[in-house]
Length: 88
Image (cartoon, rainbow, N blue to C red):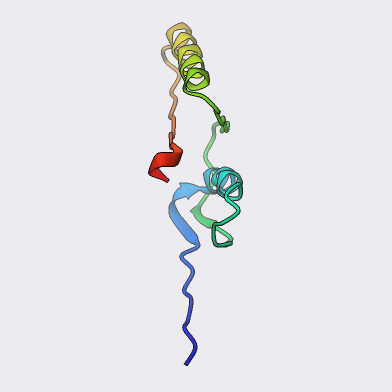
């Protein structure tokens, strides 16, 4: 019999906004198997931004800017998800 493919396409931990944003990054990889990720969680209040850096210096400049913004508004909360190509 032919093999059966079971797609693990439901994310139970992340909101749909996070899953949709991550899909943009994943779709940049032309050699990746295509699948349609979905989220089982509802969106929460907040803002998501995607930043892609070509160089370590760009990343460091961004982090310096973030530190500066947080020093002005220390009550703000922020989460940063980081991934490099080596760990992909």
